Length: 545
Image (tube, rainbow, N blue to C red; front, side):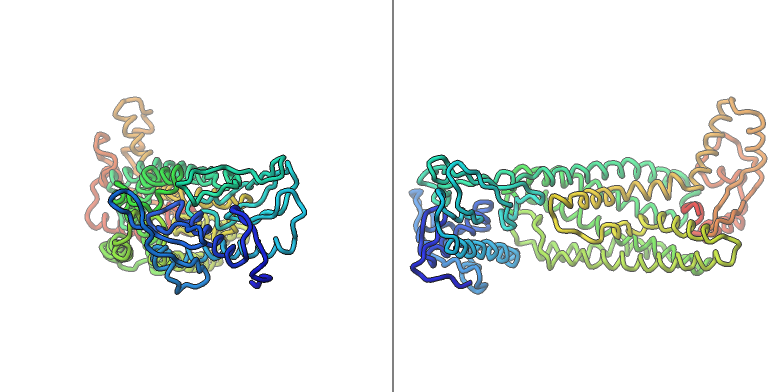
């Protein structure tokens, strides 16, 4: 931006300066206020009164000696200041933030020259943003700038305030001589650093994940305890549930150990501290289990697609699903850890390029599952057309299938696929996104366990046998249990099949064993046939269609 001439003056918190000096001073202070004040370890340069950035060497007597001066050339990425004053893994993001602040200071200089000075408190640049002139006793308010402290900045901010006192000067706070980077004139940015919206988001996320944990644990116990339910379809569910449970637990631990500390003290973001390895391990586990979630979502989609398209297809060996669901995520996590191993502190601050190690597989999984869901719905509608089902019935069944399969395939993220600009008016989006993400375990456990017809049949059978052992069951119900045990299976097209066998098994047998569930000890041929039918209809019972 072209400014008038070198003899024109522009004002910042230290007073009036020639334009070139003003640009150097304000750009240097942008670095100090935005980066050095929040993390002096990774951003070591400090402000020099002549408008430079500098670093010092510590002497044995406790004093400091000047090492070198650096021009604050924010627009030149090849300038030495970038190689010395910024961590290499965040230089791209930091350069944009720094340039925004320096450009805002230059724009403020132009505004001052156009506006003139006919007010009590003159127009000024306070280190972060520009303020117009004000009358004595006037309180100005302004929006919080986007470049203000990127590590601690709240996403839903209030306003900044600057006070013109009754004597016609900007309100000032005086700092000691040992802190040259602290401005005399003071602007109230307290509301800009308000982190309460972030805290509310984390609270919503933690509550929803705790709900999922509370529902996933009993569901896993049910599938583990009842041998009749241990078919390949349900084993895939179990592994998916386990990945959701472990991710919820590790994320809860991570928020408890790290996130709460960062909300109370944002300076810990990149600093090296005594819990750095603990933080790295927990953070790495959250990345691993999150990727396992997406891998098992894809396993669910592949299994359902194969068995709907080819009902009598031979089952794929289960170790293939295990290798994909639990083994594949090790590769991107290992690469991520290896690349960032030499960094200081924890790996909380994301590196955009490396984040694609996780975003890529996640997007691939969701995209394939979306295609699978589309194909399944088309197949369902096609088969419904061969039956005497009304159009409203077809739509209802298709919509029901979509609702059931969306959380299983991870497609609930489609609801929040478009992310609006982060502001006070879009907080509903982040609450909704966190709630849907945290409640995925709740939805899948309710749909595919607690509302599963097989599970319900097992519990009914268990309740009847328990009442029979206590001797308080009506005689008719007791005779019915001994005479016939019926398992009802609902197919994807809502057809009902019954598998009935004579029951002579003692009521004192374990109910969740396969033999006791079916009443008699079937022959091996009958057992194989039953298991084949159980696996041949992956949508049966679970979808309720």
